[in-house]
Amino acid sequence: MLWQQIQSAGRRLSQWDSILEGRPGYGIFAAANELVPTYGERLLRVGFENAIYFFDGTAIGDWSGPGRYRNLMGCYLGTCAFVALEEALSVMNTFDANMLAIATARFPRFDRDAYLRRFELLYEDRFGILLVAKSTDD
Image (spheres, helix red, strand yellow):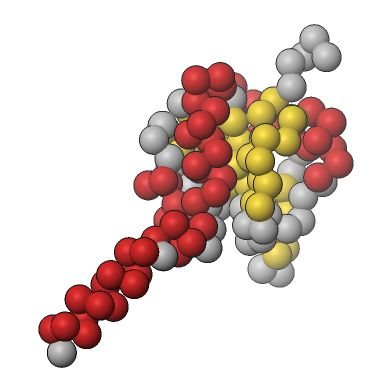
């Protein structure tokens, strides 16, 4: 039995990268880690509660607390949609965060086109997107 457990653990370790890539938020935060030198170590996240451990910087946002993202949503009958992106930008400014991670698989209702007019898409996977605010000079 011990030998079977050792073999099973070895198989899981050899597949560790693919296991992590299947976790919501891992790809987003891995991409954000690579971009910290350019955009800083703070990001506002909407969703990805259990994935913050993959980010080496400061991930701001949760359902409660000072960086709560529930203020960025309008919810009706159990479905939530993002409110105006100006509010998201305001929260990002408050916490000096340049990157925004949105769990689009979990919160699919937001005005993607409006966000992409004001944000640059840095990374996207099936779980979400990573954005950075465009310069106001653009």
